[in-house]
Image (cartoon, rainbow, N blue to C red; front, side, top):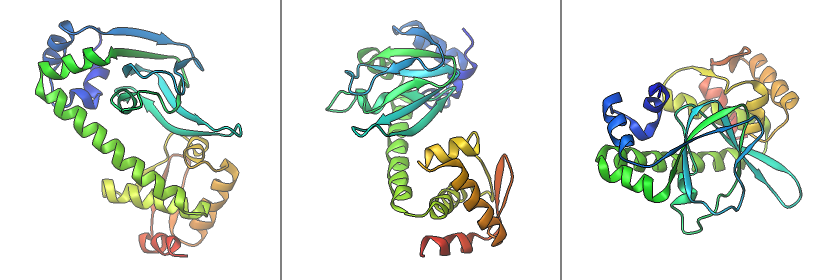
Length: 224
């Protein structure tokens, strides 16, 4: 097995290839492959598996009774899928998780993942950190959706990235289309707002990244 992407996983942070191989050799798991658009977890299905994306990309998609759908998150190599649902009291997946491109997933049953944590306390610490970080990011996303304007949503996202990384150059997450989906807005509307913000001197907009030129100006947008 190629352990490179496993070492990217937050679950195995600060562990060597030998460490990971040893714990996996003693804990049951399964490698599963999914075609593009194939469903990995079904919304409201019993949550009994946690996955690590080894290759490809998956999306969590929330469908509402009126038929509308929101792309909740995108996961790629090294990322965990399903941990919060598996360890919740509800034991149901809150979203569909679908392969947005062909994907390979390492799957653990709940008891097997617990056994993995018991074998190495670093895995338990890493898992706790990952769940806590996901909760924090969810709170930030709720704040993002509280802003009514598309420009405000973009400004909040950019300022959040600046705060977390300390860098004025913010990579566009995948593409402008994917970024728009994450904020639940249309691509043309987001593109138009970014151009307005560029004209106002707040940022420089290119196809791959946004360079923040005036953080104070972006902050003022959030107060409008």
